[in-house]
Length: 113
Length: 115
Image (cartoon, chains in turn yellow, red):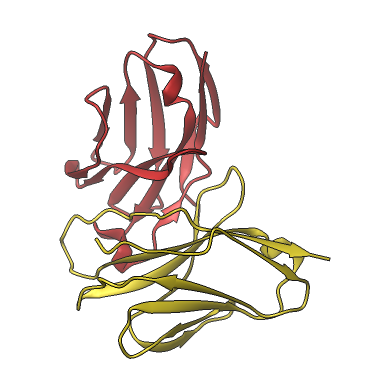
């Protein structure tokens, strides 16, 4: 599985847009990029997943450049409730293969009032 | 629909004892994975089950074991507990194995404290 590197922590203010970048230099052709959010003492929660270019859902956008060696999670207009740890994961989409989720250290996002 | 249910939520055990944790996946999900989360090591994969078969295993000693039943419910067991086993144990369910390719839904975890 490709190793990922993220900033350890980030601070932001309410209402701002937050961009968290993840590096995955040895991403493989079949790998997808997935982001999870985790609050204290809770299990991680799926945010968004993508393969290339841009993906957007109701909570976030994911930007992936052409070389796919990095990706950026964008959270528009964050609120205090977005304070959490954000994990970037990279893995193969191959069906039937037993691939476990490998979580890096994640990014602690703190939203300030 | 109901989410992933883990029981118990909190547990205190003594060194040397054994413990069994339970996970009920989302209805229709046949893949269940287990993770250990500690402040020092982060989230680490323990094992994954699909259709009652262990599909993959992380780098944990043999004291950590698991199983899955025909209704997809899963249990993990830790024998001869050590202080370092104190952690949040998380279970995730998904439709298919290899949960990177689909959303994995996590339970709230079981907080195990070994004293």
